[in-house]
Image (cartoon, rainbow, N blue to C red; front, side, top):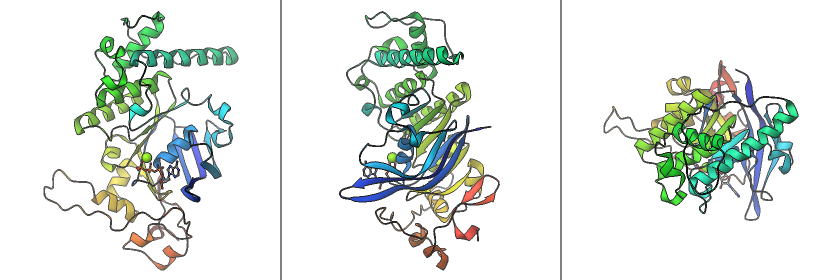
Amino acid sequence: MASLLEVSDLTVNYNSRGSQLKALNSVTLSVKSEEFLAVVGESGCGKTTLGLSIIGLLPPGSAWFSSGSIAYKGVDLASLRPKEMRNYRGSEIAMIFQEPLTSLNPLRTVGFQLVEAIKLRKSRRHKADVEAGARSRPLPGRPSMPSFGRARIPDDVAEEVEAMLSLVRIADAKDVVSRYPFELSGGMRQRAMIAMALAQQPALLIADEPTTALDVTTQAQVLKLMKEIKDKLGTTIILVTHDLAVASQVADRVIVMYAGRIVEDAGVFELFSKPLHPYTQGLLSCIPKGDRKGSELSPIPGSLPDLRFDVNACRFQPRCKYAMKVCSERVPPLFEVDEGHKVACFLHGE
Ligand SMILES: Nc1ncnc2c1ncn2[C@@H]1O[C@H](COP(=O)(O)OP(=O)(O)OP(=O)(O)O)[C@@H](O)[C@H]1O
Ligand SMILES: [Mg+2]
């Protein structure tokens, strides 16, 4: 599989109440085409910042890249102007957020918003096809036709709306398209949001905690759905979650972040069977085990460091029971200990 995205040495700063903080610190990762990558870590470790950096939606004025590149299909997104970035957002890279109400338009029906997303993609594709003489990717379609709203909707668009909704397991498309976002349940809203993102047929989908607000059953359904979508449409997915159990259910590979840095990067089986970083081991011991009733959970003692102060040391060292002298003297680089298994810890390198 070829690499779709290469993030190299990416450092992102925020202006925060008069001071600066490094939300991402020399982050390097690559995502292969059609891979399902999970990015995990505690609140504030920089997961959302990573997603926003890739899709070019960091708050202008208060956030900036101080180093690094984000190569997507060989183009450095970090150096594009906002206008150029618009050619990638939606059509190539889409992002879904934890609370869909913040990204769905409350004043428009689900159907209207889906139609707009599809029309936008079609006009973009048409323009690109004319320019490049290329053919667009076909969508999985169904022959039946929904009718909703008063506006005249082209048949092919109406067909696609229904196909998208059926893809995200919304059976009653005719009913759902005429509803406003606030009229849907949390799970339905999240599905509508996924449909909206997929309507643009992105090659890369970044899903930021898409299931956190949902109950366990709906969460499992939405995760299963995302996996199916990846298999059916060949969409590459980056799933951001603070929950390792969620990552274990769907991801091919997991990246563990701590205080703006990547501390471990491994295949999902490898990470769960042989976690190497003491932080990953700590996170794993926090997962409740259904088969061991009454077993004690052991949260990692200590708290996240203050990102306003950059230190030339391992960030996890104050919380680490294995800390050595070298850990407070230098930042551990990512050591590749096995093929495809990297860890930023002096217990495993030098
Ligand atoms: N717009 C902003 N201005 C200033 N600081 C910010 C901004 N957004 C995020 N930060 C800070 O950057 C750091 C990383 O935040 P980020 O939202 O990326 O973390 P996260 O891993 O997504 O956390 P969570 O799991 O809570 O969503 C945090 O210290 C946060 O307070
Ligand atoms: Mg976040």
